[in-house]
Length: 187
Image (cartoon, rainbow, N blue to C red; front, side):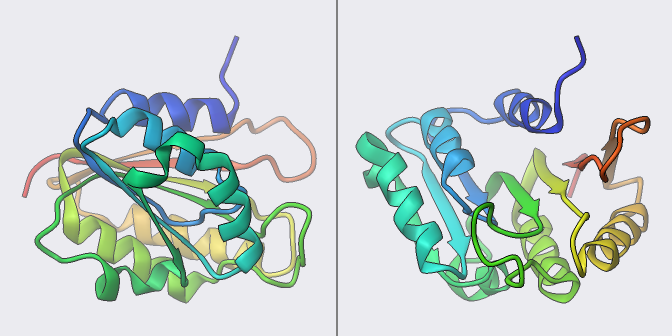
């Protein structure tokens, strides 16, 4: 059976993350990806997680339980990566779930400009063979514009340096999510 975008995103991360790695959850949300990443990096790794909503911090903190010591949660947008994570800190993987926090204010959404800034910051820190995953939910006001900007950004990445995978179910109703995986080939 084909994997959903969520399950496939986790498989793509699991394939490259090792104990001790540093990783980013660029859109913390309810904390599911943050917890998943914290499990993968082991006791010596670090998860940096970002969100602009206090509810996301609260939800994530509750899910982390025994993984709190390996996680740093930022009540800040992902566009602050340049200010919060040293350029010298290699990042093995990152994940975005673009759109809005489920069961919250649907007017608080990720934006094309801040997402592009965050993607650039991550790619500048990404280790060779590292991966940046983007799951694009776009069936809301503003979602189509962000989807188009993210797709354009990824399509324009130099193929000598990055491989970009596009995964989507194309025969489903209601704007099925699009999963993009950017893998760094070399420096």
